[in-house]
Image (cartoon, rainbow, N blue to C red; front, side, top):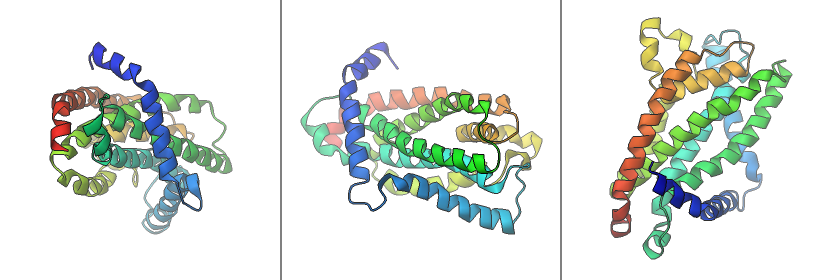
Length: 260
């Protein structure tokens, strides 16, 4: 990202906050439980996974109770999936604004990334309650959460930038994303621990940027220690990917008003 581009985004920072706040209000308008859906979604999936893959299939969790094992991973996954879906459609859903006034277009996918942080914060509070029930909270390892969430947010932003720009030109992206997310869920150690993979293939697993981050975050929610090597491998993929996405977005930005 060039310094001029960052300065421009900073100049329009109030607009970024406005879009984020607008999306938050629209998201839960005319809903019965409002922001409670931020807890219902990972909770229901956690119960399903605990029942099917825990009680029936009996997937090993390295001593972590099934609710903590699954909820800690689903908290991050739910944020990623929701933010990616919102940000990838952000340019299309704001087509009227893009064709009428100028502002840094990157603000739209960036605001979608911020909106989903509210849901994750609510889910994190529920996760801490579940951790307390199993005797894993309070713990000093919670101070590591920001270190693990920052690369997750950057990766989500990078994917959102790339897919939102791609979606302007190829509307198939909108329909492909749910299918891609379904496959990505099973390619990420959410249902299973990374220890189920043979050691010689584990490096390939952690080339998935979500894999190392989720494994590291899960370790902070239990009595285990964080293995920083997988986190480092996954994080090393994020920065080049973010740079590529930014450059692609800026290269195609001038065409948005004509195509959209």
